[in-house]
Image 1 (cartoon, rainbow, N blue to C red):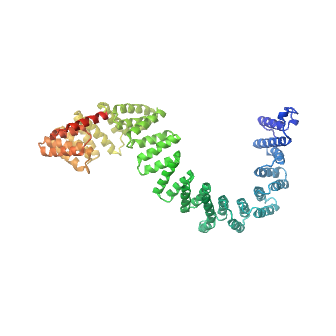
Image 2: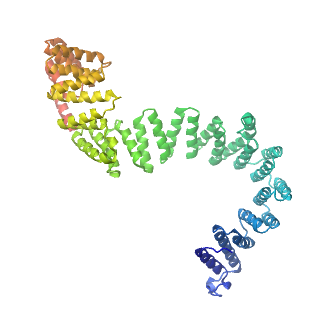
Image 3: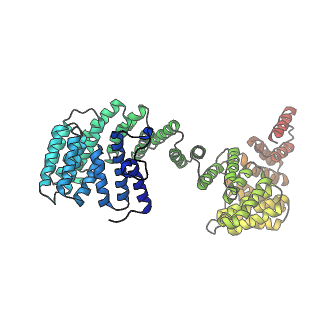
Length: 585
């Protein structure tokens, strides 16, 4: 006999010693009175020691040695029928067929009111029917007995159908299902199980018979549905819905899930309802169902992510960000989750929340350059430009080795803006120049924006006017008829004393604008100044009045227009404005 590993032998020795102390030298033959087992308990302990031993032998690939211990266990304990069926296979392999059958038949005698021993005997007989002709007759007789003895048990019909289909007897299987359908059973699980067997008898995958087969199968699941809904058995109702879902009967599946949701609605029911609405191309209903699911089950990270994706498809960035943030709070997240949310908050309206979240992300990922970059963008949005510039510099240092792809033209452009707004003009120019060099050749609009910004920066400072004009003209060449760039061209001509040419370009900029908003007030101010220089005072005042009508948020424009028009704000307004400025600070 092959030897068990040493550690397994030790376990077996101890187990048998404690279960049978009379045969052990390791345990006293007569233990103290308070440790002595009753005869019944001693027998049970011995049996379980044999079970442990059998399993250890089998785990070490010694099934022959396991068999005797399994038999010793079964002899002394009312064993589980599935275990007995397994042992019957070992008996067949190492003893004979008669002994195996005797073991299975004994289980039927021991459990006369349970269908499971009959099922195991049937399966065993079918499995080995080719080895012994009489086994087929045994299987049939067992099935017949079950039909008489357990007519309202689903296992009976599962067993019978398995027999007939295995023997190629489809007509007989059909008759069995007809009998199953006539049973007055109120348990929805019965109808779910027999319905699954109906799918074996009438396969849905047979395309040319699909409709006819569904008519045979559906009644089983309809009964399961009705009984489950009446009893508010959500699990069984969802199982019925799944049948209709996977057989592409979406309306029937949807109706079940809707009713389950009205009864209280499990997470599974609500989740399936979302999927069903999607499959039926009802996006509005799907989103409402998903919103309701998240409201009832707020900790469902998966569904919050799904809802966020739906909001993104509709460009509802703020709502998507809220769902992703809640998902992170509920279930944690990794770096990609934080980066995705940072990116969403970047384009949202809540600048304070964007900054707060980048600070939280930086605590978790302090050396991650993309998180640092988002922190810089957040500070720029809040006009904390000097602080933002420090974060851009930190991100650049981190990205040099960890994520060099981050240092693209847009990174340097944003860095340049922060430097320019914080008064570091030479440093800003270097960043803008890097941005121009890195701009993809197939995206001239991006290069044009940077060229115009750099040119306008020098123009406003009255420095490097030759370079300024060169940059602005190049921006207009790359993206002609952009009103902002045409305005820059008109303004550089104005600064260089070319008044007539300046006015022509500024008027063209105005004509190119489809709608003039407060953000465009600067173009109108440029036109006013150009007309004024050309001694066209009436036209100049007309444009300054339009500037005031737009109510821009640039104080210098308002001050100039009011001064040129001879307007002095009422003292109360001045006080209010001063208070507002203090509040802003």
